[in-house]
Length: 299
Image (tube, rainbow, N blue to C red; front, top):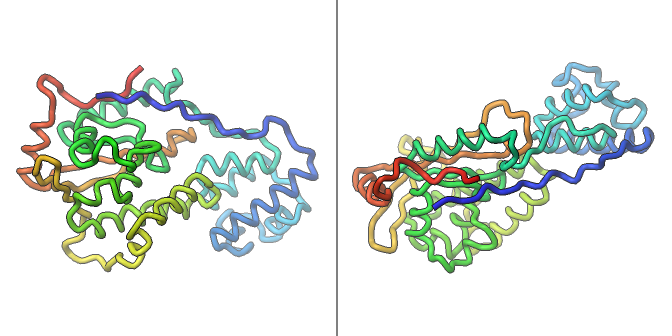
């Protein structure tokens, strides 16, 4: 079963250059907002960016206009995502530096091919590609089988889209079929909160987090996090399928190293591994006859 790659919309950044006075004022207030959010004083940011604190002050008050290179330099010092770096450039009156390509664009052919090969090679174990919000972009056959074996096809957890955070935290997702749901769910929530904390200007992430916290028992997960022990090297996932099988998995999350495209910067590859032989046997049975790997991208 294959999924079609999403066409990720390009951001609606302004194509015109603002008048200098407006751009300088907008950049100054935006820079101050990010510096405060990152809990830097002007001196701390100046040290991190290797500029004078006076220059930071002049930029924030609009007494100095930054060059495009300085905007990018400060964005890196503030550890901004590529999406937020482009927004900071826009605030200063500059065009975006980092492209935001659709995954089905011709220039992304190599990326789609590599991700498809990774998904296929990971079979018969589940693997998914998601975006920064956890929206499912693609998955291999085993991942679709795992979802189908643990979540009803008419479940509200599958709407309005398939999202791994919603699958984990929604009361009609994997929760009813998960042993020690609080442990794994707390880890999912913490990961989402870290993503949102890193991207505090992202309204979509903020709305998603608010949705997750509205589900029964999720707010309480913030108090569930326990100190790690020697047995907590990996957070396990144990689910019972509709046909009575018990699946025990651990997962890892990877990103694309040193991306210079917003879409690539926001992709996550989550791979699952069996924790016991019984799980290996079930995953092997889910593999269609004659299929060497996962679905991979289409188109």
